[in-house]
Every structure is written in structure tokens, then in C-alpha cells.
Length: 587
Figure 1 (tube, rainbow, N blue to C red):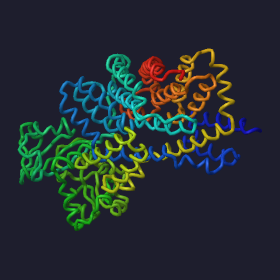
Figure 2 (figure 1 turned 180 degrees about the vertical axis):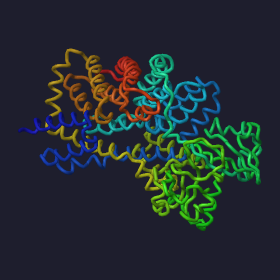
Figure 3 (figure 1 turned 90 degrees about the horizontal axis):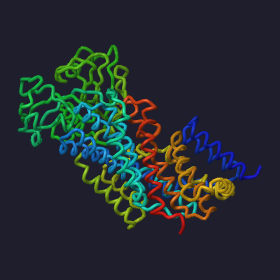
């Protein structure tokens, strides 16, 4: 069997596996690379070149830099600042969608959706708007924003990195903006005025992601809360926590009124989601006495990088049951501090006075060794270490990220160099730990991209690309250049629904370029069309940003078809009108 036939069989097999996900996409990509090596269609040097390419290094670095921004609370701070300034609920939600699109142009759209999800859900809840009417638009806004720059989504970056292997120049940093910005603007109008007619009205289900905790936080000297009333502090509106009690000296005030004035030394019993409590603790000059005492008892030897934050449920027969944490000598027994407690039944009691029950979930902080030895009576549910933010580091984190974007975007240094240097500085300045940096990289995407770059090389070298594009040219030639662009766009949209966006783009890219060259067209407009089509996956909830809101919004598969089809049509029409003007079909 000749090499072309073998490669085409492998191509079809990979296409089926990518679409069905019978195997994870990265496993499929590795299997494809292995087959190319074993069958002698690629030499080892060619096969493994993708793992050391600029694209892979840039992609990995951007994953890390996004985590640095999240760790410093930059994106969350943007959402909170917006909530403070816009009073009208409908205008606030619309402003948030525009902000999400803007932020998503420079960071991962999945991360942007994850950070804004609780903020948007909270605003909709306070405004009496069903969450299902805002969460899907949130995901779609983040996807629309990703088409504005080359780093907006990993798909854009993957296409840009693969272009040199086909003889094309990489995408410019803002090249996609010519079509990305109009698409995002018109897409926003669709989300504001048309999508609400098709969106269901269902309440959110955020219990698992926003489990309410009770925590005792003491106001220290210098806290901005000192002298403010609870109303003026905006703890509920801006930080998403409720003050259920205040202890002052030996007196406790339960359900304090809005005009209750906070003083230094007050211990606030606050209720809210984990992220919200940590945000208040890290940024408003309040402390957990339990955490302070643990740090003092360790002689100040707890290094930030060695401290973990976990959720642990109290199991039957635990020695904690029926006692307060102080009576059970929790800190002395386990060498950890309890920052907060979650109980299914609502309570207005302070954390210090609560008697532990079976099923209570404790938010525990301590050294890694201590956390690992909590014992059978405390079952760890999850590690939340990476959800802690520190706004003191936000200016530096933002400066490094913007510096890399500006230097790379203006071409002063290669983008890969700019982001790698930014990552190195982030590690050196301890904005992120090495373990957290490696953990933030989406390795399946890295493996997929590296393997598919190698497949592209084999596709060209064996002549399979010429055979396939020759066959496609005969069928598609009567359509003309605009018809060809439309056909390739729609095929890419169809492929990107069941398979990953990156895989769909990498499959279609060599076919589009080869067909364009065969018919005498400039390949650039078709490259742009495929990139936009692959990045805009709205019709099914399989895109990661959509999966984040699928459960909380209580959506059905059909909901995405109803709303996403219209947005896909909008994207298609805008692209067909703009692409031929900015990137002509003929040189």
C-alpha cells in the first residue's frame, strides 16, 4: 500500500476518533504520531519537532500567565469594580458581557468564564433575573472575545503556529481583529436583544461551586472597614458575603442592622462562598485568629508555597463531633487551622461557638504534611489552594502580562520570547509557584498541537495533501472563491461541534490552503475563515466555556441549538462580508 493511501486512512481514522472522543483527543493524537513513526512516514526528528516549537512554548506560557492573573485576583477585581460603578442591573449585566469579551481577547476564554460566573450569577440573583438568561450569554461573550487577538484562544495560536509549515506567514497579533471586533460587536447586539427571546427562565444551581461557608474574621488596625457601617462597607454587594453576627469584647450581636458601625477588634461572623471569604480575608485587613495562632505556634516557619487549603467533611465517629473546634483542640491535634465551616442547615451562630456535626465541611489550611495526615475522620473533598487570591500582587502581575502582550504584539520581540520571559519573572518574583505553574498548563492541548503539527508535515511530504486537495478542487471550483470560503467555513463549524476546536482547525487548514493554491486563490482569506469558524463553537455545549455554565444554568442541549444557531449565522454573515474585503482572494 502506497504512503498516500496509508496516510489518508490514518486521517479518516483520526477524524472519527476526534469526533466520537472514544479516546481522549491527546491520546488519539499520540496514537496517530506513533503510527506515523512505526510505518516510516516520519523520521523521529520531524515527529518530535512540534514539542519544541515556538507555538507549544507560547501556548504553555500563556496558560501560566493566565493563572498568574487569576492568582492575583486581577480578573475578579475587574468584575467587582464594574459592579461598584454600574447601578442598573440590566446595564450592569450587559457591561459585564462586554468586559468579558474584552478580557477574553487576551486571556483564556474558559478561565474568564470561570471567574465571572459567580459574579454574574450573583448580580442576576439580586436583580431577580433567572440565571439561565445570563450564563449562556456569558460563555458566548467569552468565545466572541477570543477571536480578536492571536492569543485570544489556543485555537488562534495553534493555527498561527502551523502556518509556517504550509509556507504561510503566522497570524499577526491583531490581524484577526479586522473581523473579530465587528463579529464581537454584532454578536453582543444579538445577545442583548435577540437571544433573550430563546433563552429559558430557570434558576441557577450553584450549590456545589458556591457552597456557603461560615467564618470568623477579626478586624485589624488599618483595615478600611474601621468606622464604616455594614451598609457602607458593601461587603454584600461587592464581596458577596453576609455578616450574620459581630462579636465585640464579650458581647455578640446577631443579625446586625445595616447601620451597625465596625470597629477595630470586632470579630465578624461572615457567610459566603469560599472565594468570597478568601477575597475578604486577603484584601480588607481582616484575619482568621486560628490561622494567626497556627502561624505563631510554628515559629513563622510556614512558607506560603508549602501551605495548602482544602475542604474536608467530618465523618461519623470523629472526635470533633459535639464539640466546638476550641474544645476539640483542633489546632493542637491536627496542626492545621479551620478558616470556615459549611453546614447544610443555615445558622446565625459564630464559628467559634458552633458544635461540629457529622457532614459538616471544614475549610482547612495547613502545611502539606499535616493535610496529608488528617486521618480517616476527616475526608478531604478537594484542594482549593489555587483559588486563593492576593490583590497586593495584582499590579505586578498585570504589568508583566501587559508588558509581554505589548512587546509581542508590536513585534519588538517575538511573542514566544515575550511570554517566556514574563513566566520566568513571575516565578522569580513568586507570583506563582513552580508546581502551580506546571499544573496550570493544559497538557492535553499541548500534546494535541505538537502531534498534529507533525501530522501536517507528513501530510505534505507524502503528497497526501495534493491528492486530497486536488479532489476537493474539482468539486468546489464551480462555487467560486466566495462559495469556497463559505463551504470551508461551514464544514469547519460542523467539525468543531463534536471535536476540539484545535483539532478541527488543524484538520481543515492544510486542505483549505492546498485547495486555494490549486484554484489560484490567495490562501490567506481561507486561513482567516477557518480560524474564525473553529473558534466560534456555539451550537452545542461541548466547548469548555459552555460546559462551565451548562449545569449551573440548568440548560438542555436544545437550548444551545436554539440560541447558538442564530449567533453562528451572525458570525458567518459578518465573516463573509468582511474577509474578502480585508484579505482579497487574488494577490
